[in-house]
Image (tube, rainbow, N blue to C red; front, side, top):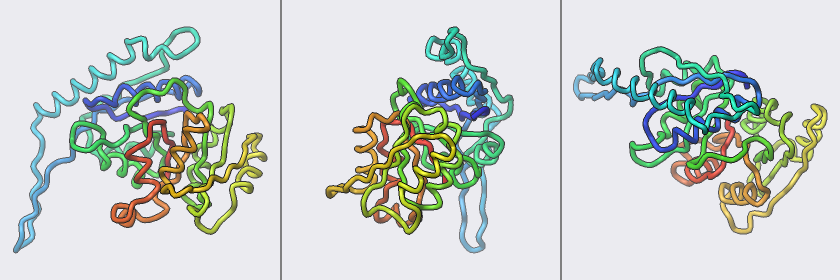
Length: 277
């Protein structure tokens, strides 16, 4: 995890995002790059004939977004919160000097980074947006980390892998091998009944052992809980400071209508979540 991208905009979770980035960068001698993020451009579609009109942003507005984001980034790395390394130094960090980008631009840029860090989605427009998270998740081809509302004290020391036997979970584990290799404790968690056909948690434990990762397998009863609730509650009980979760084994539309583990975790997690699709 040598290169970490953090989209910066003004909201309450940006400090948690940067603290997560700083802790991970410190563990891997990595570099954090910040970039200014703005809302997508507004498009209006008119009927008969169908015409789409996009309203571009004014240069002054982009300048204000860029100035605010750069100020937030610089202020964090000038603060005590960023003094993560044993010698009290800040992790390597760099501001990417480009115009503010929207969600689609962020997803494109994220393709050349080991990880992108976003905030847990908030309702309304005053916090991190689900559209940002999903753009990176589906269009970057790379993993992301979702920062919780409150910065974690540690990250990656005790990892819980939410294993439902799916290809999405397998991909998340593959992307996260550097994190797993550094963890002090790894638990492969399966919630009974919330699985797809595929290798068991025990088989994943055996695979991790081939890489020198000592993990334990745990199957939890749902106890009437929805899968997402069970995963978060079990991770909390185990003292996890990082959750691995494959995203959207069920389709997004189905999860929007009927609910699903991914949706529940995205909106409710209080610990960092490492995720891939």
